[in-house]
Image 1 (cartoon, rainbow, N blue to C red):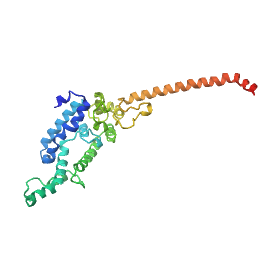
Image 2: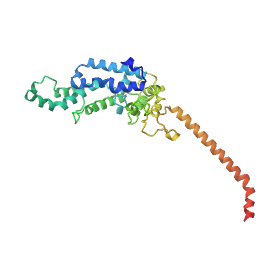
Image 3: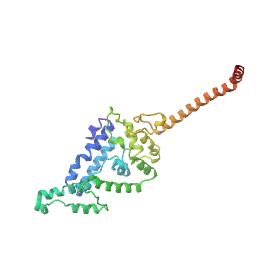
Image 4: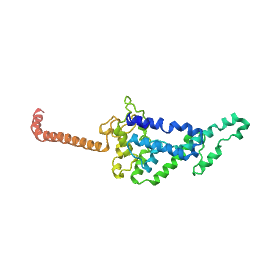
Length: 291
């Protein structure tokens, strides 16, 4: 599967892998069976997802970076969800939403049902020191509590540079490009370099020096704003959010525009002063005699 995905561009690769071929392909199994009891099986799935994501993004995830990559977009991740993290929320929400239907179908024999009960699964959830949501029938409710805990633990383990990148990546607009359909006709297709810069500069998944990657963090913000939003540097003259420019380019371009502005300003100011100083003494008598 990974070898075939490498035949196309990285952006469609990542889009298909995130939304179809990775964890979504086994989500039905996670919801219908107590897979959370088979941690070895879930770890193998996560390792496969990680390896394929590394080939697509052309990076090597370290432990801290992979912890961030597994988070949803709203928490600053790549939404490459983990089977270990989702197995229990998926099964709990499925049990909660189907309990009444199971009791109605089985009737009095529901007590003889040999499956794992909802209470037993909740006890496994409570062992992780996690609170039970109000709406137990929705997977998102369980998953949000788990993600908030993972996000908090990740923040406490990050250094200054990675913490800044995590907080910036968790802003609402930053991850919009990952949900955009990679279509060139609609302007949502990103280049290979854009995908590589995004994973390197903002999320800091790789084990490169943090000082080098910290200098590149702004390029992600410039390049990956949603197409429907106003461009961050539109005041510099760029109105197209699809342009892939890094922060150093915008800084140099901004300085050039300032130099051009001051050049023309002093140029016209010089001619204005010349006109007032040299031409007015000759024109003033004409107006006096005309009166």
